[in-house]
Length: 274
Image 1 (cartoon, rainbow, N blue to C red):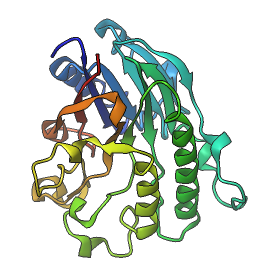
Image 2: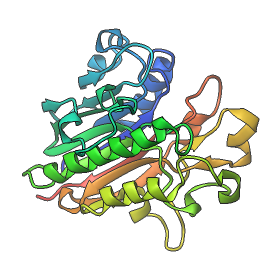
Image 3: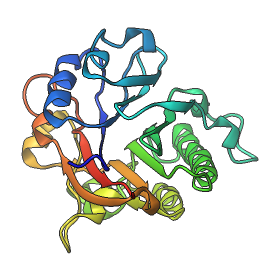
């Protein structure tokens, strides 16, 4: 890679302390410049000692114990950290819904000339349950926050576990998911409202013609990974002015072996403008 190319990766690790050795091995092999992690399940003070510092990363993290949690690690500077989108919540929300905006689900910073954000969208649990409506409300805040960011000098890149499969082609069997979250029209509308701000679905942009980008998540149950029963719910969304997407890959090997995360890391190379 040239000095103008940034390698950016996102990974829902499903517990950073439990997967520290896996993360270390992956960092050494993949050599990403900017790392976006989700579901770290730890406070910033609990990040395994030396995991990032010995590899020349600066870190910004947000967490609240054993649930949720997001992190950015950068070898190309880290500044202007932002830790909430709550101020961008749509007006007129239902006060009885779960307050997902107070949870540690987004952290952003300027890294390598980009405004990058590590995003862990709510799951939604069950369609039309309170958490489902709270998920849509959270997405409304994310869109409003993102709309404000795309007017700023630093190009925006959102990476993370969005808990939405954009199309039926992004799941192993649409019929098996009828009535489930992640694939409903309302969730996909929320996703599209975000993309329509001018953000490029990087993995899909470089997929071969006529093909969908690879899955990034497989359930632990029922041998789903080996059967190919997956979904594409982890994404990197990039403004065009960030640069050209050179390549994209999913680390399927990271989903194999003993005690893996149920997600695989997604990585892109971005050629930055001169």
